[in-house]
Image (cartoon, rainbow, N blue to C red):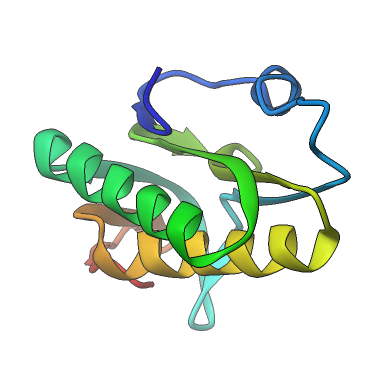
Length: 139
């Protein structure tokens, strides 16, 4: 199973977390990113994510491999939504399992920051005033 995935349908974080359970694990950290109703002072009604899937999946896997090499973690997983999302929907999830909490927290932060910076996923926000706009990775 890949460690980084794109999903065009909602997913269950509890199921993903269960996939990280291991007798070696003493600490778990996660990050959930949800669709919010505002950005840069503008009201947001919803958004759509588009990805260059092949490149996004390979770069996402590379980031997870880097986290496994850089931090003392047992395993990690990341799922990012694509397609149309409503306010309040889960857009991205990162889960990290480690023997100790410090490594789990640090790796979780590293993964979400690198995914937002490097993975080719673009967000098109729909604003309450009828306008829409594309945001580049990292935003």
